[in-house]
Amino acid sequence: MQEAGEGVLDIPSLSVLRYKSPSVLIAEFQATWGVEPKAVALPVAEADGFLYEVQGLRGVPMSSYAQPTQKLRAFEDVVKVFLGLGKNIILTLCPTMGYIPGEGLQLRDISGASSPQLCLANPRSSEVLGAILGTGIDIVRRVSSKTAGVGLQGIAIDVTDLWGMSGELGRVEATCFCTSCTQHFTDTAPDLLKHFKTFPNPWSLLLRPTDTGIDYVSEVPPGTTPEEVVGIARQRRYVEQFPNADQSELLEHATLLLRYMRSRHALTIGAIGALLDYATEGLDETYTRILIMEGETYGWTSGLWIEELDTEFDDEGNRSYDEIWFNVTPGYLPQTVPYRAYMWRRSRYTINNFFDLAGSLSNASMRVNTMLSQRSIEECRRMVADHWQRVHGSALSSQAALVMLPKDSERALEKKIRRGFVGVGLDREFGDRFSDQLAILPGRADTAARPVPDIDLASILYRLREGQA
Image (cartoon, rainbow, N blue to C red; front, side, top):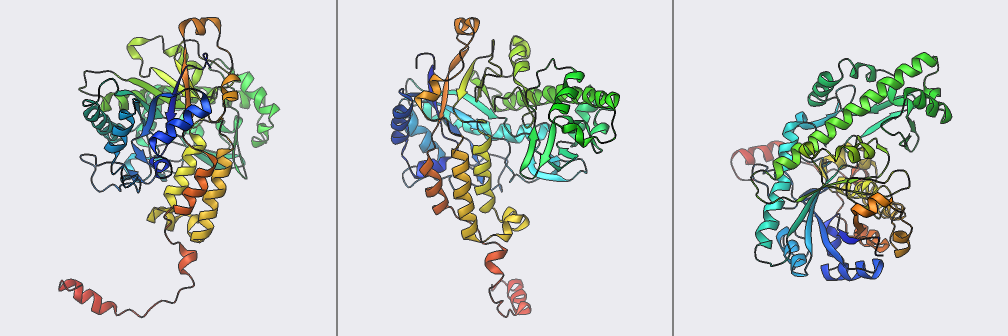
């Protein structure tokens, strides 16, 4: 427990507060981990909308959890309660929100089709996300000015799913090909992207679509050679996606793939820095800048090498982060950058997927325009509950999980690289209660069998024009 360091209670969604009070969550954290949390991490936005008004962004939907409970009527009240309990605040932002309008800000695939998710590399996205986070910072600063001894400790960006991907065997379709991303690759790696706009492309050496998702190889350190990449692809039988390629062609693909990974890493870390700079512009105080990661050697959906982050941390002049949170595995332990062990497999990735599913079921556009429309309300409710059981299976919620964390090197112990751990305020029963009370919009399956009433459309239009309807 002494080696584990300070604890942080992460509350990924304010929906949690509808089932447990702040004091109960803190008490359960202590019962689980043996220590009280020193800080509480709170989201600044939800999967279904904002938690507070943001200047210049009116018209974006407010979350159904913007008023968490009858007593906690606003985000500001939540902050006040936790500060009153003697806890510092860390604000967390997940940039994958899909309800902000504007196709020019969204991820684009090979064909140019956009997805609802914002592209972090777009400077305008950095401004929008920075405004959301900056408003949260202002709220915490205002509330904490009246509470002695505690306040805003840090700001965290969840990077576990920045760059989505899909496809079928031999056709990996990863993102993003928007104008901002394309320009970055043109400037840093000319002619590179054209090799990823065909099939099979270099991604298929380390990525392989399956019936249930994307199988991938993440144990690829920054110093990996093209020969080693091809060797891994042969071991995993991914080379079957290149039926007519000889060794020289595979090596060429591997070289292109490694160039892409390096360029995507640089783009991602630069975009994160720009976002955080925008959110904290004009502030005299400095706050710990945190990245929430999965913990794999290379994160395909984050676009980041954890080992590269460790190396880059020594460059104080260009440093855009101060700490990382990740699911610690024996693969690689930082030697330079401070970190906290995130006590959930794949960190926030599966948790976010769960809340994204719930948000989609309460969003009119997503409910109608996706395959979810074919499921009834009750089918969707069961799907949410079942999905939660699988997600919670990734929880590492016991003191034994802390004891089993890999040991730091002597150098890391001396420098106190491990600052502590992050425990998540979610338990197995949460999913059942959450799914029971989730407001799910009707889909086509709920309305298909209903009789359509006779409508006098001409009369309705006339009354609307006359201001009578």
